[in-house]
Image (cartoon, rainbow, N blue to C red):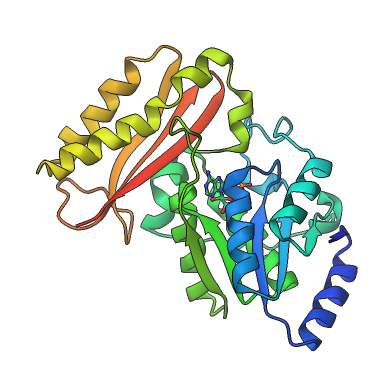
Length: 282
Ligand code: AMP
């Protein structure tokens, strides 16, 4: 497996891979890899000749007071895990090379898909995400790219950007990988104290309860949200950022679940903010 930091060297390598007629699968990440990331790498391995994983903690997608500086990093372990999952090349650029002094161009998806949920509580976040990804897609030129359902809003925003900007890249969404107790895997889980970690499965449990109510015929958004709210606020050390039920297409709030909806939540355990979601299929 190759490990490259330099943008020009990456371009050279990609050009060689392309000349040899290989297809390219690409998994963008911020590193500190876990089974969620590895499931994306394995899917890319199964469907492409050459697999690129980027590891880049992108400062543009963190707001003031968020955890950019503290975000966990472990490139050595990541390299080992990525190689074992079938990665051919890790690209991990330095921030000063990726955004050199004077860098001025940003890409932003507007409208309802970026307005609510994490777009509302993390202003500028998705602008940072689309900007880093446009650059990475231009450098890596993948045939297919792999994202996790755990970041459902991100999936929609990136898919929209790919369509709007006419990228010729297949967009693949893989299921959320969970710990045995249901907690969605996340690089941020390592920040949880033992007490918070023991309590955190309440997120998925509450989503499952909503699913059960929905299957039982409940369609009222407020009633479904209230269920999640009550279960989570009963747990000490939790602070709800949002619990929303939105249509899966435009992410607009749904008062009644009459078409397929996303139930999405963001909850803080102390200073650690976790997100999770499920889809209610109609
Ligand atoms: P991150 O490193 O958190 O930016 O995530 C990189 C990619 O891995 C994104 O497409 C995420 O949606 C995906 N991912 C993160 N956690 C999980 C998980 N638990 N299951 C599946 N995919 C995940």
